[in-house]
Length: 145
Image 1 (cartoon, rainbow, N blue to C red):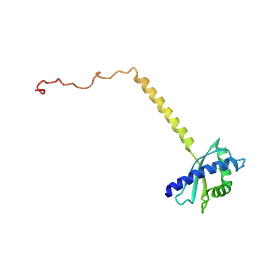
Image 2 (tube, rainbow, N blue to C red):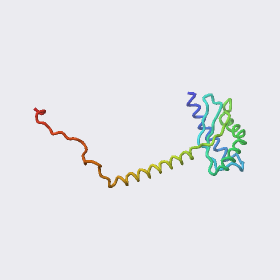
Image 3 (cartoon, one colour):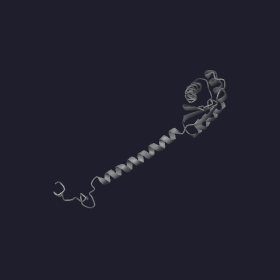
Image 4 (tube, rainbow, N blue to C red):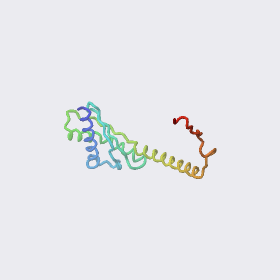
């Protein structure tokens, strides 16, 4: 039950933090943030909140600073909403999924290009030796008797 409860609370924390960032936190440094995931330890003491930011490196840095300064407010609001005996401490982490997905897309594009070049080279290719390189035996009628 503990693991299922932690997952359920983590999902709730993700929704709460996203709503708080949208409605309550009015920091001008906060960029276009999307809360992608939240994970909670088994003892419900520490929550890791993963987020992405649309923009350049400067937007990411200013958003990280804004989240760090608003962490206390967010934690208290999460604690009120969850009603737990101990409110979990929050840690914010920049989610690297979009950058990793971009790298994977680039690698897939290179693989598709290499496959197309191989297919183009193989289109008019002929075997180097005989068309049928396998040896064929003459069937003996003596085995069938």
